[in-house]
Length: 243
Image 1 (cartoon, rainbow, N blue to C red):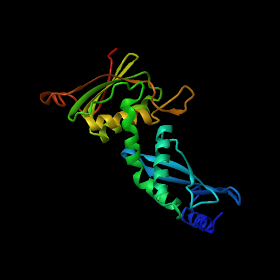
Image 2 (cartoon, one colour):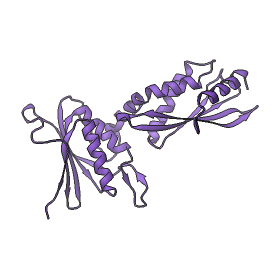
Image 3 (cartoon, rainbow, N blue to C red):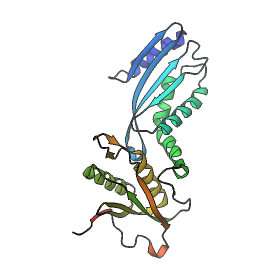
Image 4 (cartoon, one colour):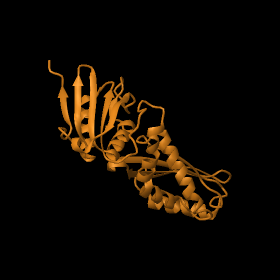
Protein backbone atom coordinates (compact mmCIF):
# COMPACT_ATOMS: atom_id res chain seq x y z
CA UNK A 1 0.00 0.00 0.00
CA UNK A 2 1.14 3.56 -0.62
CA UNK A 3 2.61 5.87 1.98
CA UNK A 4 -0.12 8.36 1.04
CA UNK A 5 -2.81 5.88 2.08
CA UNK A 6 -1.15 5.25 5.44
CA UNK A 7 -0.75 8.97 6.05
CA UNK A 8 -4.38 9.53 5.16
CA UNK A 9 -5.48 6.78 7.54
CA UNK A 10 -3.55 8.42 10.36
CA UNK A 11 -5.12 11.79 9.57
CA UNK A 12 -8.63 10.31 9.42
CA UNK A 13 -8.22 8.68 12.82
CA UNK A 14 -7.19 12.05 14.23
CA UNK A 15 -10.09 13.90 12.60
CA UNK A 16 -12.78 11.35 13.43
CA UNK A 17 -11.61 10.62 16.94
CA UNK A 18 -14.94 10.45 18.76
CA UNK A 19 -16.33 7.10 19.84
CA UNK A 20 -17.46 4.97 16.87
CA UNK A 21 -16.65 7.73 14.39
CA UNK A 22 -13.80 5.88 12.69
CA UNK A 23 -13.07 2.16 12.73
CA UNK A 24 -10.18 0.47 10.92
CA UNK A 25 -11.54 -2.87 9.75
CA UNK A 26 -8.49 -4.25 7.96
CA UNK A 27 -4.94 -3.31 6.96
CA UNK A 28 -3.12 -5.58 4.53
CA UNK A 29 -0.03 -5.31 2.35
CA UNK A 30 -1.88 -7.19 -0.39
CA UNK A 31 -5.48 -6.02 -0.03
CA UNK A 32 -5.03 -2.46 1.21
CA UNK A 33 -7.03 -0.69 3.92
CA UNK A 34 -10.67 -1.03 4.89
CA UNK A 35 -12.20 1.52 7.24
CA UNK A 36 -15.63 2.75 8.26
CA UNK A 37 -16.58 6.31 9.11
CA UNK A 38 -19.83 7.03 10.92
CA UNK A 39 -21.28 10.50 10.62
CA UNK A 40 -24.58 12.21 11.42
CA UNK A 41 -26.13 14.39 8.72
CA UNK A 42 -29.37 16.33 8.32
CA UNK A 43 -32.01 15.00 5.95
CA UNK A 44 -35.39 16.29 4.83
CA UNK A 45 -36.97 18.62 7.40
CA UNK A 46 -33.63 18.48 9.25
CA UNK A 47 -34.24 14.91 10.41
CA UNK A 48 -31.14 13.16 11.74
CA UNK A 49 -29.58 10.53 9.48
CA UNK A 50 -26.77 8.30 10.71
CA UNK A 51 -24.53 7.33 7.79
CA UNK A 52 -22.03 4.49 7.91
CA UNK A 53 -19.54 4.94 5.09
CA UNK A 54 -17.19 2.03 4.42
CA UNK A 55 -14.12 2.63 2.26
CA UNK A 56 -11.81 -0.05 0.88
CA UNK A 57 -8.58 1.56 -0.28
CA UNK A 58 -6.81 -0.89 -2.62
CA UNK A 59 -3.02 -1.05 -2.71
CA UNK A 60 -3.07 1.11 -5.86
CA UNK A 61 -5.04 3.87 -4.07
CA UNK A 62 -5.12 6.85 -4.60
CA UNK A 63 -4.19 6.13 -8.22
CA UNK A 64 -7.35 4.01 -8.33
CA UNK A 65 -10.74 4.71 -6.82
CA UNK A 66 -11.78 3.34 -3.43
CA UNK A 67 -14.61 0.86 -3.12
CA UNK A 68 -17.45 2.48 -1.19
CA UNK A 69 -20.48 1.04 0.59
CA UNK A 70 -23.25 2.99 2.33
CA UNK A 71 -25.43 1.86 5.21
CA UNK A 72 -28.14 3.78 7.07
CA UNK A 73 -31.27 2.74 8.92
CA UNK A 74 -32.88 6.06 7.99
CA UNK A 75 -32.44 5.62 4.23
CA UNK A 76 -33.94 3.16 1.79
CA UNK A 77 -31.75 0.82 -0.26
CA UNK A 78 -32.40 2.94 -3.32
CA UNK A 79 -31.28 6.07 -1.49
CA UNK A 80 -28.12 4.34 -0.24
CA UNK A 81 -27.40 3.27 -3.80
CA UNK A 82 -27.85 6.84 -5.05
CA UNK A 83 -25.53 8.18 -2.33
CA UNK A 84 -22.89 5.61 -3.28
CA UNK A 85 -23.11 6.46 -6.98
CA UNK A 86 -22.80 10.18 -6.31
CA UNK A 87 -19.81 9.61 -4.01
CA UNK A 88 -18.07 7.54 -6.69
CA UNK A 89 -18.70 10.32 -9.21
CA UNK A 90 -17.19 12.79 -6.78
CA UNK A 91 -14.24 10.47 -6.09
CA UNK A 92 -13.24 10.60 -9.77
CA UNK A 93 -12.53 14.31 -9.33
CA UNK A 94 -9.96 13.53 -6.64
CA UNK A 95 -8.15 10.68 -8.38
CA UNK A 96 -4.45 10.44 -7.45
CA UNK A 97 -4.94 12.37 -4.21
CA UNK A 98 -6.21 11.45 -0.73
CA UNK A 99 -9.97 11.84 -0.89
CA UNK A 100 -11.82 10.11 1.96
CA UNK A 101 -12.18 13.20 4.15
CA UNK A 102 -13.23 15.28 1.14
CA UNK A 103 -15.90 12.72 0.27
CA UNK A 104 -17.27 12.70 3.82
CA UNK A 105 -17.46 16.51 3.85
CA UNK A 106 -19.13 16.49 0.44
CA UNK A 107 -21.86 14.06 1.46
CA UNK A 108 -22.52 16.03 4.66
CA UNK A 109 -23.16 19.11 2.54
CA UNK A 110 -25.14 17.46 -0.26
CA UNK A 111 -27.19 14.67 1.32
CA UNK A 112 -30.46 16.65 1.27
CA UNK A 113 -30.12 17.34 -2.44
CA UNK A 114 -29.33 13.70 -3.22
CA UNK A 115 -32.28 12.38 -1.20
CA UNK A 116 -34.58 14.92 -2.81
CA UNK A 117 -33.50 13.87 -6.30
CA UNK A 118 -33.81 10.21 -5.39
CA UNK A 119 -37.37 10.60 -4.16
CA UNK A 120 -38.61 12.35 -7.30
CA UNK A 121 -38.83 8.81 -8.65
CA UNK A 122 -41.60 8.07 -6.12
CA UNK A 123 -44.15 9.17 -8.71
CA UNK A 124 -42.86 6.58 -11.18
CA UNK A 125 -42.49 3.58 -8.89
CA UNK A 126 -44.92 0.68 -9.06
CA UNK A 127 -45.93 1.03 -5.47
CA UNK A 128 -49.02 1.63 -3.41
CA UNK A 129 -48.56 5.32 -4.14
CA UNK A 130 -49.46 4.57 -7.76
CA UNK A 131 -50.72 8.03 -8.59
CA UNK A 132 -48.38 10.92 -7.97
CA UNK A 133 -48.90 14.60 -7.63
CA UNK A 134 -49.11 16.43 -10.95
CA UNK A 135 -46.18 18.56 -11.98
CA UNK A 136 -48.47 21.61 -12.10
CA UNK A 137 -47.97 24.27 -9.47
CA UNK A 138 -50.70 25.54 -7.18
CA UNK A 139 -52.79 24.38 -4.23
CA UNK A 140 -53.74 20.71 -4.21
CA UNK A 141 -55.98 18.46 -2.14
CA UNK A 142 -55.11 14.80 -1.67
CA UNK A 143 -56.91 11.98 0.15
CA UNK A 144 -54.82 9.13 1.58
CA UNK A 145 -55.93 5.81 3.00
CA UNK A 146 -53.97 4.03 5.76
CA UNK A 147 -54.46 0.33 6.41
CA UNK A 148 -53.74 0.54 10.13
CA UNK A 149 -51.96 2.39 12.95
CA UNK A 150 -50.35 0.19 15.57
CA UNK A 151 -48.39 2.93 17.37
CA UNK A 152 -51.29 5.37 17.13
CA UNK A 153 -50.11 8.07 19.55
CA UNK A 154 -46.64 8.31 18.02
CA UNK A 155 -48.02 8.06 14.49
CA UNK A 156 -50.50 10.90 15.02
CA UNK A 157 -47.85 13.16 16.61
CA UNK A 158 -45.53 12.49 13.67
CA UNK A 159 -48.21 13.34 11.11
CA UNK A 160 -49.07 16.52 13.04
CA UNK A 161 -45.41 17.57 13.03
CA UNK A 162 -44.99 16.91 9.31
CA UNK A 163 -48.10 18.87 8.36
CA UNK A 164 -47.09 21.74 10.63
CA UNK A 165 -43.53 21.86 9.27
CA UNK A 166 -44.78 21.71 5.68
CA UNK A 167 -47.61 24.20 6.31
CA UNK A 168 -50.27 21.77 5.18
CA UNK A 169 -53.87 21.82 6.40
CA UNK A 170 -56.23 18.91 6.60
CA UNK A 171 -58.02 16.22 8.54
CA UNK A 172 -56.96 12.92 10.07
CA UNK A 173 -60.13 10.84 10.21
CA UNK A 174 -60.87 7.59 12.02
CA UNK A 175 -64.11 6.02 10.77
CA UNK A 176 -64.36 2.59 12.30
CA UNK A 177 -61.47 0.63 10.83
CA UNK A 178 -61.03 3.16 8.04
CA UNK A 179 -58.22 5.70 8.48
CA UNK A 180 -58.08 8.66 6.09
CA UNK A 181 -55.76 11.64 5.80
CA UNK A 182 -57.05 14.65 3.85
CA UNK A 183 -54.39 17.25 3.06
CA UNK A 184 -54.39 20.57 1.27
CA UNK A 185 -51.45 22.79 0.41
CA UNK A 186 -48.70 23.58 -2.06
CA UNK A 187 -47.93 20.81 -4.54
CA UNK A 188 -44.29 20.66 -3.47
CA UNK A 189 -45.23 20.38 0.21
CA UNK A 190 -47.69 17.55 -0.48
CA UNK A 191 -45.06 15.76 -2.53
CA UNK A 192 -42.55 16.11 0.31
CA UNK A 193 -45.15 14.81 2.76
CA UNK A 194 -45.59 11.67 0.62
CA UNK A 195 -41.83 11.17 0.64
CA UNK A 196 -41.73 11.38 4.43
CA UNK A 197 -44.78 9.14 4.78
CA UNK A 198 -43.18 6.44 2.63
CA UNK A 199 -39.58 6.56 3.81
CA UNK A 200 -39.83 7.26 7.55
CA UNK A 201 -40.21 4.63 10.26
CA UNK A 202 -43.47 6.01 11.54
CA UNK A 203 -45.21 2.86 12.82
CA UNK A 204 -44.35 -0.53 14.35
CA UNK A 205 -44.88 -4.03 12.97
CA UNK A 206 -46.65 -6.91 14.70
CA UNK A 207 -43.52 -7.62 16.76
CA UNK A 208 -43.24 -4.01 17.95
CA UNK A 209 -40.26 -3.15 15.73
CA UNK A 210 -40.19 0.27 14.06
CA UNK A 211 -41.20 0.06 10.41
CA UNK A 212 -42.00 2.21 7.39
CA UNK A 213 -45.51 2.77 6.10
CA UNK A 214 -46.01 0.30 3.25
CA UNK A 215 -49.81 0.13 3.15
CA UNK A 216 -50.81 3.63 2.14
CA UNK A 217 -52.72 4.49 -1.01
CA UNK A 218 -53.77 7.67 -2.76
CA UNK A 219 -57.55 7.59 -3.13
CA UNK A 220 -57.85 10.84 -5.02
CA UNK A 221 -56.08 14.08 -5.75
CA UNK A 222 -57.16 17.29 -7.36
CA UNK A 223 -55.94 20.79 -7.97
CA UNK A 224 -58.00 23.29 -5.99
CA UNK A 225 -59.66 26.12 -7.87
CA UNK A 226 -58.55 29.53 -6.65
CA UNK A 227 -61.95 30.32 -5.13
CA UNK A 228 -61.83 27.10 -3.08
CA UNK A 229 -58.31 27.32 -1.73
CA UNK A 230 -58.03 26.21 1.87
CA UNK A 231 -61.83 26.33 2.15
CA UNK A 232 -62.63 24.97 5.63
CA UNK A 233 -59.41 23.17 6.42
CA UNK A 234 -57.29 24.17 9.38
CA UNK A 235 -54.04 22.90 10.81
CA UNK A 236 -54.42 19.13 10.88
CA UNK A 237 -57.34 18.11 13.05
CA UNK A 238 -58.16 14.63 14.32
CA UNK A 239 -61.69 13.44 13.79
CA UNK A 240 -63.27 10.26 15.14
CA UNK A 241 -66.50 8.70 14.03
CA UNK A 242 -69.18 9.34 16.67
CA UNK A 243 -70.40 6.30 18.58
